[in-house]
Amino acid sequence: MSFIAPTEDQVLAMRVCAGIDELAAHERYGAATPDVVEAIAEGIGAFAAGEWAPLNRIGDTEGAHCKDGAVSSPAGYAEAYEAFVEQGWGSIAGPAEFGGQGLPFTLATCVLETLGAANMGFTLLPMLTVGAIEALDHHGSEVQKAMYLPKLISGAWSGTMNLTEPQAGSDVGALRSTAVRIEEGPHAGKYRIAGTKIYITWGEHELAENVIHLVLARTPAAPAGSRGISLFIVPKYHVNADGSLGARNDLRAVSIEHKLGINVSPTCVMSYGDNAECIGELVGHENEGLKAMFTMMNSARINVGSQGVQIAERALQQARMYARDRVQSARAGSPDKNPVAIIEHPDVRRMILRMRALTEGSRALLYYTAGQVDRGLLGDRAAQQRAELLVPLLKAWGTDVGCEVASLGIQIHGGMGFVEETGAAQHYRDARIAPIYEGTNGIQAADLVTRKLGMEAGGVLQALMADISAEMQDVPEVASLAKDAAAIGTWMASGDATLDDKLAGSVPFLTMCAVAVAGWQLARQARATGGIEKTAVTKVFNRTIVPEARGLGAAAMAGAALYYELESEALTG
Image (tube, rainbow, N blue to C red):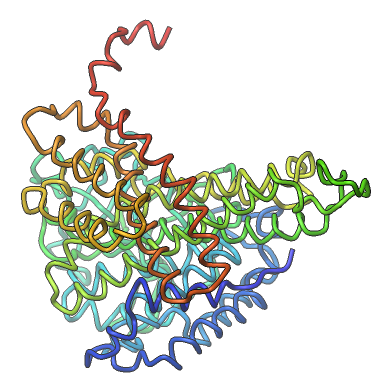
């Protein structure tokens, strides 16, 4: 199917939810003028539609292949990535001193959203590179920044994140990969890396000139657990002092996973140091790797939340076209017994409007989060804390939305949605990974009710909900939801709720908070435009989705004892 970027809604979200015009008033972001914002949104839309979207289907049906450690992509992908690099789309928010454009993170968010809606699996390649850039920019030495950032920002080199090991999934502290300092020879001061990593996205490929792996490992005397983790730069090809590429490092892709979706993205099993000659260099100090990796993970979690928006947009577009073109049955109760397009039937219309309300609501949350990130980068501590609170909401609810909207897209296609030829099933298969990686949605909810709820003794959450309820006095559904969420937050922060109680209610509570923010931002968009379409979509969100979220309050406060009345043996058989 054809793809059209949702440029108008993106620009609206950037202006109303992210407040990009206000950001452009700051010297750092002065180049983000209204004409530049529109030019970037329109330009990436045209690029994505012309270069990346046409490859989405072949990427799914053919996928990536691994043979003798080399990974190949389907025809057309090398040329499309080369065009991405040549046009500078990866450099939007990169630091200007290393070749980036220094524009707001909000605009980089727009670029990735558009690319991902066109081709989600392909967009994982630049998405992981963004995380590597941020980790090195915040934690790398000046020498490392000068060596690696220009090529990563341009996209000539790509980046990866290497955390997971066969015995260490979400428990990163259980990893066993080793790093031994080299005391003499040409690599003195660097480290020999050894170990196996799994689920490494785009861990091996030939689209970029070099692949820069950021690898978590332990030094010999490191403390146990997560306190003993260090971060290392491990390039696929050694980089000479003049920036040219040297010999290949001692690392390889053992295999790639055979997955439910995102088939074009090679999910690699990576082996480091088969010949005891894998060389890496330390980022920051020993035993401080997790701090650097969390910088990368925070970026990735925002962008994975965006993936929910991306796949929802693509599924919505396909479902709308099918509902418009598919003619079946007369309208119930109509004197005209001729069959009509299925969009005329009430339940199909309900599903389409639900898909649209969820898609636009999650997009509103995405850009509100991006705007808070940008303000945090300008030194606004309150915005920085609010962004930290919003990240788990966006990652979890945004990806839940992606799955629901993709599922509804299949439903609208009926039996044809269950048939691979239509392409509707691909969206659901691609979407399903997003609630799992970069910290499962359960982990996001746990983060919300422990670390994030604890910020300023609960004050960060309470301030957000107070802002929503104050501004939404004329939208009682959203104001009431915000008040409910604030009350549950108070209960969770009190001594009345145990840690188990909070964790047991964390997922429904997260959904309540996310829907409150999304409803707030959608209402602000409707006010700003006064348009019939946005107003109608916002009404659907407020009158159907918001009440559902309010109904989760009982589950959020049900407590853990309810789930422990049965012994584990009774549950597992």
